[in-house]
Length: 40
Figure 1 (cartoon, one colour):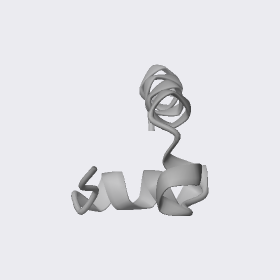
Figure 2 (figure 1 turned 120 degrees about the vertical axis):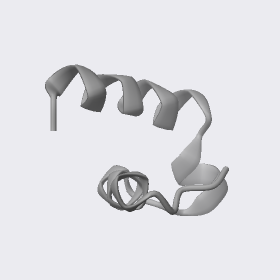
Figure 3 (figure 1 turned 90 degrees about the horizontal axis):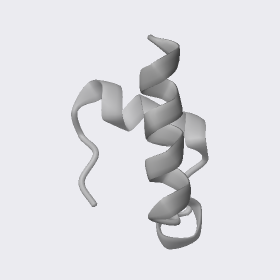
Figure 4 (figure 1 turned 90 degrees about the vertical axis):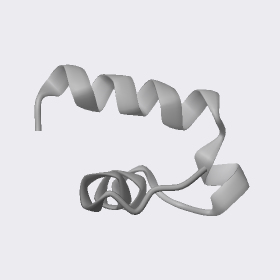
């Protein structure tokens, strides 16, 4: 995966407090995003 994309997804993850709101690690979030099953 391209470094720039990972950086952007990391910013999204932090800004939207994905860990706190959904209990996902960044790695889990990336896996869901890659599979196309991520829904906020």
